[in-house]
Length: 164
Image (cartoon, rainbow, N blue to C red; front, side, top):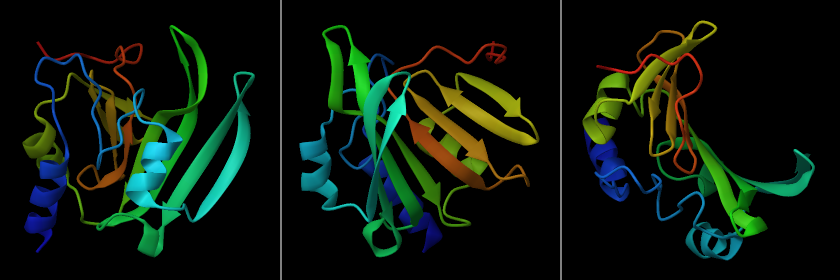
């Protein structure tokens, strides 16, 4: 059953092998999708919060429990992105998945998304970095996935060793 869920989740992800597009999740693409698109895909969030990020008014939508996607405890979407055309408060800046225990493993991430562009460690936690804008943080056991954060395409974090 878990394998089927992983296959369905991986199938929902549209990859751009060329590496120029952002990763997307369930039709939501950071840097491209708007609040209206998210609402049409996911419905009303469980809760919302307004906040200031680097001086900009932003908004966060959280989908939990029954409103979260299957296999996910919580889906958090942050809105508000500075683009070359200026600040867009309605544009998805990032989305974060907090999977249920056992929903994803290090092996399922590599199977679904391929080899990472970089690997790193933050405190005691290992992470994978994908240049298309996916960061995967693993549980302290190093095997299960704690969080997956999708952003517009990114440069590697400073000091992240890149594979040769």
